[in-house]
Each structure stands twice: as structure tokens, then as C-alpha cells.
Length: 108
Image (tube, rainbow, N blue to C red):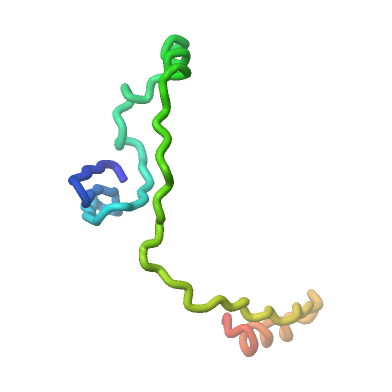
């Protein structure tokens, strides 16, 4: 994302794609990844010692956590199918390797 605008309960982001830019609008909450250009470089300065010491004295406002249930429901969990046994082919037996790749693995 190279540009982000938040308006109440919706957000508009601009992202770079091949050959141009794409503008995407969505509702909040959302998670985005930013890249160079989202924040001005002047805002990324390293804090000085006075600022660090002042931040230590600043009072923190601790909020209670909110329930993050967004209406999702787990239907079922399954283990993935077991992988087949490994077949070792001798390096001198190229025709067998080609046959296994063609008939069993369906790769070629």
C-alpha cells in the first residue's frame, strides 16, 4: 500500500500493480502492509534522548480488551492425507524414472 485514507468506518488504499496503481475500498477493521511512500521520511526520524525520557513519564491509558468474534464458525478440522512412501530410483535406471513421473506422479 502506498497511500491510505480512513473515513469513519471505511478505508481506501492505493497499491502498485504491474503497469499502474489500483485503488481499493473496504470496511474497517482491516490489515494492510505498507511500503515506501506511505509515510513521509521526515516523520521517520530517530528520537532524541529528551524525547525518550519524556515518554517514560507519560501516563499510559490501558484499555480493556474487546471480544473479536466476527461471526466466524469452525465447521470441521481434518488431518491432511498421508503422503505416500518415497520411491528411490537408481541413477542408471532413467527409463523407470521417466515411467514413474509420467504414470504415477502425472508430471510429464
